Image 1 (cartoon, one colour):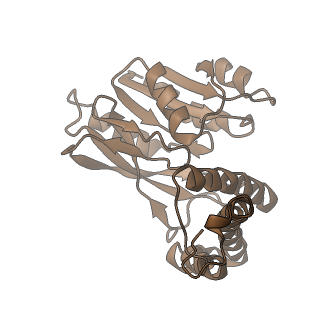
Image 2: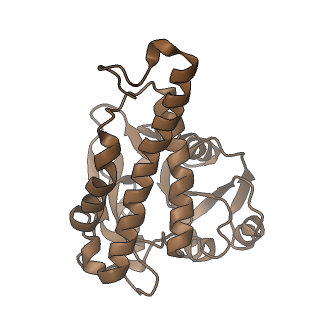
Length: 271
């Protein structure tokens, strides 16, 4: 099939069990498939290269900086980003081709829906919650945010955004334990980010973060349609959001011992 004037980039680390499906789904779209690996030990690099990817090592600097590094390695001005646990199905690949059918796509950026597929599911649940981030865009009109924890494309002012038909299949959960390990590590990075930005979160959030985020995931993000497994994944999400705040509190508490002027038991104290 004719390849598009489009670079596809993927960031990865220890994704040998999933990245093969990711690459096979998009390799016919492009002549420039870039995988930026941050130190896999499971053979991810060799597998990606065997499937036609150009594999580049870069030590992990955080989500945004890693994706910005990957953008800089791409040869084309048009970029498609997919994660190593995502698969572009045939109907979405056709929609991407259709956007290029008359040459330059009509808009400089396009949102693409993403839906999780949990273990044991063959396709996204019809009522599954969907994120709709920008994933197809011109790199001269948008770049990934430099934030180490916020995974989003920042577009130039006034850039029009379209929406493509189709849904990326997101195989984010290997198991409940693996999901919780990943979320726990991410909460460390979030706590680091809060400290770096000097964010002060009211102390009362410690007591409501877990139940509030459980309801956000279970009801707001419709995990309840997945039955018992949805309940368990909503609990994992809530725990991770609680850990983000708890770890930040712990760090600020330690700082307050070294600096009495910032004591957390002051009436106006925030952490």
